[in-house]
Image (cartoon, rainbow, N blue to C red):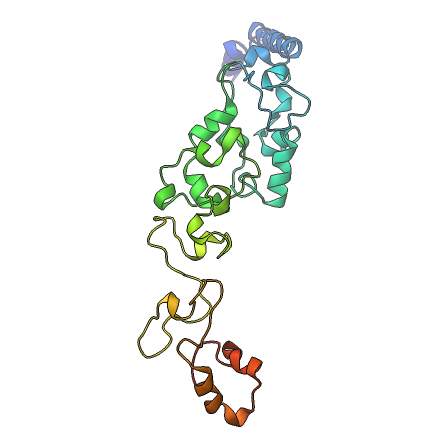
Length: 267
C-alpha cells in the first residue's frame, strides 16, 4: 500500500512542476486572450467588405470589431442568429415577421450561408448568393420553366434583393396585343413554360358551355375580351318568350349569369 502511494505521489502528471507549468500556461493564455480580445485565437481575418443594404449596428464591416469575438460568438453557445441580429436589425425584423427570404428559411445560425474568417476581401453577401439555389425554389419564387436559367440580375437590378416585387408585371411589360384588356394578372392565362400557347385558366364561366363542348372566345366576346354578351347565341326575342312567365324586365333578362352562373338551363 505504501509503495502504491509513493508511486502516485511521484506520477509526473501530478508533480508540483507539472501543476505549476499548467497554471502558468493558463495564466499566459488568459493574458493573451484579454490583451488581444481573442485575436490570438482568431482562425483568420474578418471580412472588410461593407454591405450597404444591411444595417450593421454602427460598424462599417465585420473587420471593424475583429478584436471583439463576443460580438458574434456567445461563450458555450457558439454562433447564434440572435447575436447577428443585434446588428442586422432588418434581418431580425424579417425573421420575426416571417417575411422575405430570411423570414422563411429555417436555419439555426447565419453561418449556414454567410461564412467568415475567409479574408478581408471575402464578400459574405455575394458568396451566399453564389451558393443560393434550392432555397429560392422552396421559399420564395419557383424558378421553373422559362425562369430556370435566369441570372439573378434579370430580376434583381442594381443589387436590390430586399423587397423585390415577384409579380409578373414587375419584369414583363404588358404587350400591345392585349394592353388594357385583362389587367396584369399574367398567371391567369400564361405559365412559366412559355408565353405561348396561352390559356385562360381562371375563367369564371365554364368554357364547355353548350352542346358542342368548349366554345371559342369570340362566341361571347364579340367586340372586346373584357365585355361579353349572350345575345350572339341566345337571341333576346327567343329568351323573352322562354322567360315570359317570369315577367322579367329587359335589364333582368340581359343579366343571364345572375340566374345561370354556370350556363345550365334549369339552374
